[in-house]
Amino acid sequence: MTRSARRRSGAVLAALAVAYALIALPQASFAATDDDEAPEPTSSATPSPTPTPTPTPDPVRSAEYWLEEYGIAEAWETTRGEGTTIAVIDSGVASDIDELDGAVTGGADMSGVGSDDGRTPLGSDVHTRSHGTWVASLAAARGTGEDEGMIGVAPAANILSVSIGFQSVSEVPFDQQVADAMKWSVDNSADIINLSFTTNQTAWGTIWDEAFLYALEHDVLVVVAAGNRAGGTEVVGAPATIPEALVVGGVDPSGRASDAASTQGVSIGVSGPSEKLLGIGPSGEIDEWSGTSGAAPIISGVAALVKSAHPDIDVNNLINRIVRSADRAPDQDGARDPSYGFGIIDAAGAVSSSIGAVSSNPVSDITLKEWIRLNRSTGSTGQLESGTQPTPAPVELPALPPRDAPVEASNPYLPSPESLREVTLPLFALTAAGSLVLLGVLVVSRRLRSLRAERDSGS
Image (cartoon, rainbow, N blue to C red; front, side, top):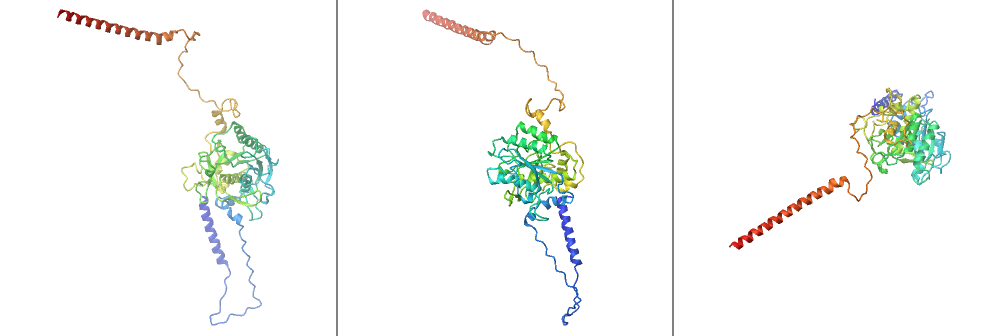
């Protein structure tokens, strides 16, 4: 059953419940007619109970439309992400945030300018400094009460805050920071690594080969934002081009590919909401924002729910449950679309649907190891050791002609056999032929003059 079908079923059940409540209400007895006076109440009458006021919905929680629309609240009936850890490699997750109290269980700084625990927001502008805290709150915020305050997709999951410096904040090269952050995250028991950034370039340095391989070899899922057209990303860029990562595209609240807050690319695996999102800023205030930077932690939260419900699942099957349970987008083209991937996230389906196991990554036609073997030169950082991949079958080529015999060095000012054959002799032949023609012309000319002189004397 798709999410829309479940929503329709829920609406029908809600209507039936209201009807039943109306039927079950006690009915008043009206025995008196218009001409009769109403009977005086007796002292034995049972007083009417005071109605319980309906609580006013929390506006923040109500604004988190993705919780109901994408099956997240339904998935909470099974799990809230207990026992899982999401590493947020970003600008840092601010401390002293009520909704994140107890969520951040560790952290580190890779920029050299942040705090050791990764809890100091970094960035040259407010947006960048808020970015990491927004991302973490979408993934695993706890709320401030039973139905109050912002709550994340996996509110029982743990967060690792790994701060890196964007732009010119740090003197440490950005590629190095990301590589170090990924290795630290894996070594500190991350199940999922969230990367809500793009380089706007399809290629990446060899230093990322080793870091991404390290995560894959330790069975850690890497979730990557596809990027946004509004930010200048017309097609996905690294790290969203790295094989075996789960790349996330964005949709608007109607379920259509977002024009500004997403992009497209063949590596997109699944889509999630990327517009009218909420996030908690470093000051503790709720901000509205957009972008696949927000869709990615929503998918990371869903991955935490699936991992919690299926603790022994490997990365390939974790991705498979997410993409195979996705709902088809309204204008999706084919089984996999460059704007939507395999479809739009359905958290409840990813957690509870019956989905067969796979032995390979369902979103990549090639493994990262094989890509490195084919694309990196010998001796590069990501070069595989000999024998780690099957050797391709040899290709039969025709035999090459025998090579020319070596030629001894000679004086360049003296004619060589080749120059005599190819230049001097042809030039001599042409010169000789021209001389013969010229001589013939002269002989004929003299003969004509002689004949003319004889004719003139005879006359």
